[in-house]
Length: 411
Ligand code: GLV
Ligand code: MN
Ligand code: MN
Image 1: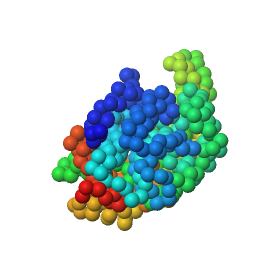
Image 2 (image 1 turned 135 degrees about the horizontal axis):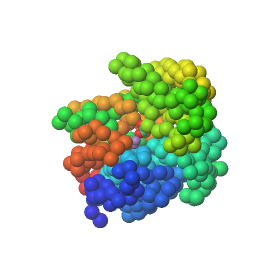
Image 3 (image 1 turned 90 degrees about the horizontal axis):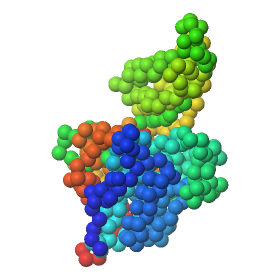
Image 4 (image 1 turned 90 degrees about the vertical axis):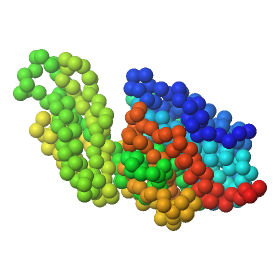
């Protein structure tokens, strides 16, 4: 068997989950494109003689060696945002397969087990809660509180999981994750930190605090022609004002506290051209350099929402959907990685959330970023050159060989 090439691996899945309407990929957890990707992963992992299983939270595990505490983990996710790029998630999974294949083919044998993990619902694109598989596994979220989460077609998480063969009543904290000795996630860079440098790979320092808030304005549904402008209680107008206020509040603090606020999703009920809506919901994605700055930003957005609602004759309800504290990755592991791949490896922080960030609260965790020439992510034009993807695999391979103490039989 020959060594797997990350570029070939990504090419194999390049038609799965394409979104003709949005462009890019829409690969929602437990739906058929994502299940096809799981089957693709399983085929490759089994061909590498790894033992593959799905855990209680729908995460896939491929084991090289008998599972036991002290194992090393690597991997990422296969789900995507709506209309996402080809690299966010799959690059980390394909790179892990390629790294394991190289280690096996060159006769390396890890002294501790190595697990390749594919986390479920990292983007939260289907059920609204980011990094759900990893957060359930580390015990950061109460399983009972998520089973009833609904997707946009009204399907409950519990039913979607059951249909995918996962017993929803068994979801919850999983010792296997919490007993890993370390976890390393390789990811396409989401920014231009490497774009103008000679470096193809960086190591991560930390992640902004971030979360999602559902802000629902309720007004009065009515007729678009028969209702005088002064008689309206239009929640869409309130939502529009809130979008601008959230942008302005975050922009005022971005330089000092990295405050960011984004509304990328809105829903108007009933949503008719000639109908004043009865409710307008905006989802605000808020981020900041630390937990206090994030709390301040969300407080300011909530106060703005209250003020706007009262001016527009509406009511408003603000609900947190998922919140992730700021992450500082383990400095010892970062230094060890730098030694394994070259001390001049740049260090970068990121505004994007990751399963590695969730695990960082429990175990030493690190990330490798692969150069992204235009910095774009969560969009079809996300990219990384073939050469850089292979450089990423090379770096990950060295790191995994070091962390697992994998000696080459022939070395
Ligand atoms: C995930 O990629 C996120 O940052 O939302
Ligand atoms: Mn993402
Ligand atoms: Mn990702």
